Amino acid sequence: MTTAKRHARVQAKPERVRDAQRSSLAPIFDWRAANPHLFPSDTSLRWHLRKHRDEYIASGALLEIGGRLVCDPEKMEATMRAVGARVAAERGAESERGHAEAKEAA
Image (cartoon, rainbow, N blue to C red; front, top):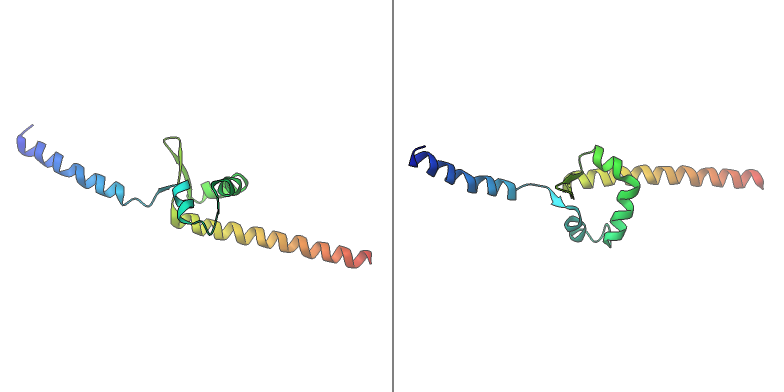
């Protein structure tokens, strides 16, 4: 291998490092720390993910890389909105059923 080729290869490496630094993936608990208004503690995020993990994985918002959970912040927000809307709708339907049953009992 010529010196010019070696030099070109060395020059390419910093570019790959910069590209990796531009990655949108973030460690999940770093993301949580940057969004305390959504999850006030790591425990609250763990609980939420335990209940809805499959939805976050299916959407590509949550990944495991090297044994660590990482997330795509944009997909996390979109998935969180979808999960939140679904849960709110389910709770609303349960509440309406409860009110209807209470009216029938009275």
